[in-house]
Image (cartoon, rainbow, N blue to C red; front, side, top):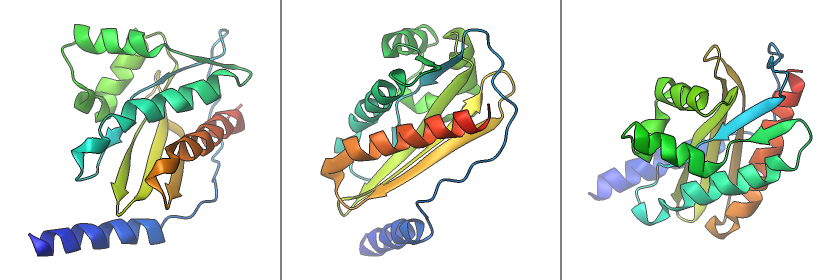
Length: 173
């Protein structure tokens, strides 16, 4: 058991060391919609060994949605609509990490982009990663990665991730 914790700790530290904080933008085809960019932000998956952080996935997605909803050119699908679709499809939150399922949910919700991802908390350090997927093609059109040294500052990580996601989509216009 001690060896397993050591391995998990090493992998987590390696992921922090290997992660830069600079945003990288790749030019993508613009999202074609006369209605603007409609984003379904799915709850983030907790990849931490500590299950007590599970509810933070919904909180993080809500914080990101709130930040992006005030940005010009973006419309956000209401979380309740996503929840209703999951119920209708008899899926739990874990099923959202499969990109094909997430794209299907995005289409049903009327979105042209979905945002999905995960976060990990280990020794109070947080790593949050997200990707934007164009519903029409399944192409990844942007993303964000944030890391922090204090799990109590998830709101700051969410704000920074929202900025990077918006910038990713704006770079493709």
